[in-house]
Length: 144
Image (cartoon, rainbow, N blue to C red):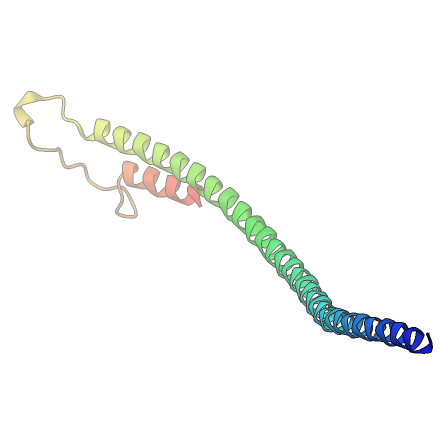
């Protein structure tokens, strides 16, 4: 009976040893997987930090670009207003010149049909300029 008891003990020890080997292998796999998981988490954390730094750089660049764009818009609005003013003044000067040219043409039209095609020569007033030329020069001076 002693042998039987020892044999049962040996079988149980063998079963325990086999189970311990299986557990050791499973623990080894878990340790390797844990190390891989930790490496994966560390890589993920590093990627997250890089992404956050990239977002901050993008925010900074966008803010700088936005400020420069606002400055350019301000400058362009000022230039637009100046151009609008110059255009209005140019239109006014053109209207004045047109009126003066029409008036000058009316002054130089000869009502006598015998002189058609020729313009009468009126002697220039003092200073060597006709009245139409003086009016034109005066309009140009006012346009400044």
